[in-house]
Length: 544
Image (cartoon, rainbow, N blue to C red; front, side, top):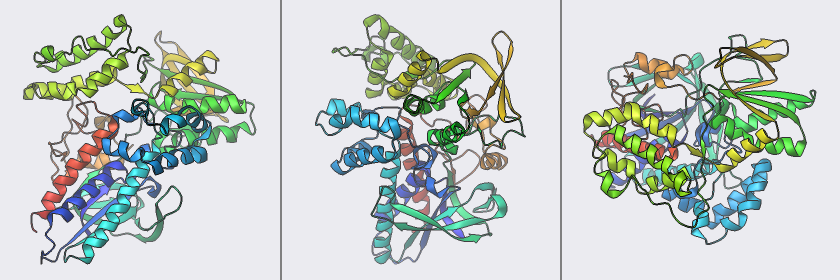
């Protein structure tokens, strides 16, 4: 079968790309167009439950997860949707049904704010991540209805097909790409749209198909890559070693394992390899579980430097912080990537002496779009310097997250449940019924820890280091996709088309220039996917 476009990965990136492309085609084709043509779009995912939220926002895998940023930094159309009366009620119902201990606490703290008309307080709410999935699901249902109406009144036809399968090979042919699957087959998915419950699109498996898919264009949206594989080969399939925390099901998956072990063991030891987002994600619900269920759990976490994400919390001062360095006058002189990075760093450090927090300054930097305004003044050389080196430095200095995760970490450290160590994990291996974590600290001392569960949250691999971990990435490298050796990211053009592969798009986190303005990740994903969708539809419409 030949498709017009296929999204490899059914999360936000793949779904938004196709929605944008189809909306463009419908709006630009004249109703009286006499041309008989068919546009077929496809979405492939190895786990249909990931459609359309992906791993990060999916209904199954993002349970207990909240956005790292408050509602005021969300995309404006998503924010308006969340604050509709019906969706406010949906938040409460969701948290009551699926939110666990932390969900009940959220309701207790925020229900009055949610239903109030106080815009300032509403702006500071942290919403469950699954609501991005529910929003996208509604958009997907709407485009399916729109297609049906369009097809009834036009000779040009549009279709969306859904597939279950894991793409492992892509071969470039003359005018198309041949897409092959693990185990040499995939399944066509049937779907129905439900009016009950939280899930609106219900998928079911249809027949298995062996022949490859041919596609004119394709995009990859697989979310964050997994971390480096640290475990020994004979340990990688151990049920209590969690290599890709988010893809496995994140916090809900971990808690199921803990509860299972607690049935036959009084004390449980967990080792987290990493000290940032993955660890923090689990701690609020985990700490509530420990306190409420009175489970005897010891948690060890480690990283080489023990630098973590900062708390996304404004100071209590009634006065607003005013920028001291990144003023309108000084911005005219910031014409290099290094000056921008140093100016942001100095501004953040300066906040302490005025009785404010770094997050106060960062909030204003984002609101005034200072980074994007400075980038406009850069010449080509400086833009390349920014993309390859200074953007990552700014990112590391300006990572802020949901306050409850930091508070949970501090509580667990205070109670002696969580112990953070400066050390590097060298390997994980089996020993009888336990997992052994072998580490080396800054003094070159080797330590070993016998654990019941090991969670690898050491951070995603960069594109240049991905090989067998993500087969599809390995094959697009073989097909000619280029990687910047300095940033470790794929080189793409302004439309996120891969350098060296025509009609092949990569708008996600492993593309160079994915989020230069340091917006929220979801804002960058949606923006980039819209750019790709617009480009795809323009190319498809050239013959109409």
